[in-house]
Image 1 (cartoon, rainbow, N blue to C red):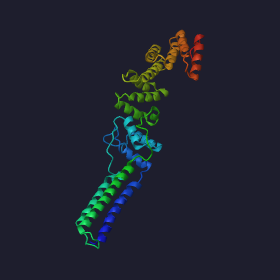
Image 2: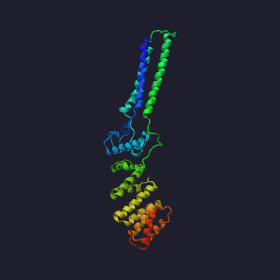
Image 3: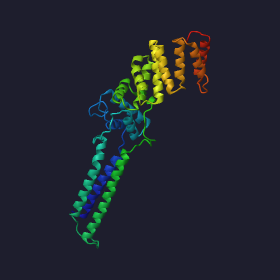
Image 4: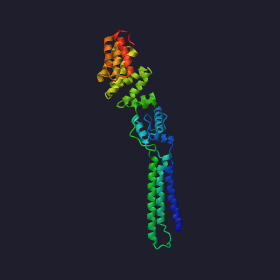
Length: 335
């Protein structure tokens, strides 16, 4: 083969490698692609070896909805994955599939390397005729192989850099690992939360989800569904003080409001106050039950007066306590 033909073949190989680089750099996934790709990387916590992208389970659907929301909000891939792993115990990271848009990332470097090595080996074993230069054939062949190897190395390095550019987050930096706050649970169904709680009974972080779910039931007046969650938090040895107080206060009020059980309710409030003696809610509701359930207006009035000494009492709460104190002092019926 002539020198010109060999140069043409080598140039074609380099052009092919450059084309692979261009494909990697210019192919940018859409939001839908990102959601599917991220979903395929996370194992469904309640499924047998399925990713959340492929599972029909309600929890998987909820997790995919969360991924979609975070993608729209501009969160990074790593932040989304971290949030899912932190929020759903049992969810684990799967290996990225070698298919679809990631297939090029798996095959392009190997293809480029194979093509480059093949061209250089072929060129090495098929030296061209001596031309008009003064360099001997072996020296010219060695120089060509050195140049070809350098071009191959640069091209291969370009492919690696392009792959990194393709895979990196293109939505901006993240401030760190994202953790789900309670307000983020609004998009999670009751059924999913129940399943997560059941699978993570001993996880300290699960008490926050228990309280969030119990509060949903409480606000709907579904005391029967709220009770076991509040009770579990109140009895938990790993509950934070604030969590335990919240649970005890709710249990106390449900005991009174749901069953008219004044003494158990007061006992719950006293337990809450033993943890946090300044809990305004515990003191106020205890005063209500003392007044309305036990008929002890003096004790109720004393609690109301004590609450009014708090300097940071909210205006609406202050007005309510003042009205109740006035009515209790006059021994009027509780409101």
